[in-house]
Image (cartoon, rainbow, N blue to C red; front, top):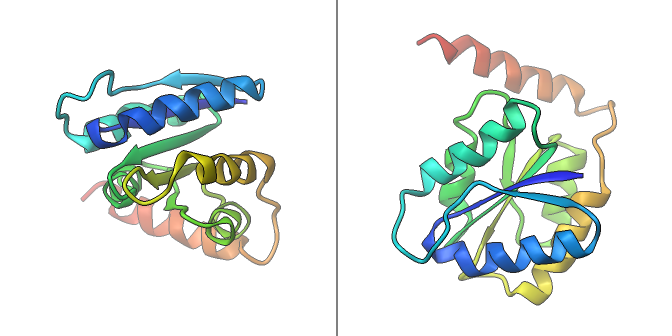
Length: 150
């Protein structure tokens, strides 16, 4: 699987650890920034990573900032992207199975790399299956489309 990665300076080190981890598992990582611990605007990093999903270059995305919250908010502004903060196994599972999330966000100040590996494994092993949540996802898309042309 090809996975877009993005972070701000707070998530830089964890993002790099995640990149090495997913590559060791046979996945391809596409690093959309940032590339140092110099301060950056996380919405721009989320945009760069999500654009790779929207354009079909990557199938999934992993974003990291201090809490994961800012990245999730920013990613969800991108058309067609469904992102969630996933600091526990159940949330990661539901993000994919109930919400068809293509992007998971982590907080480098909240979860340790040792636990993130379990979360990443869960995120990448699951696939959305059409079912009871489909009307909800269609509704999300409808609302998104409705306000796209503001």
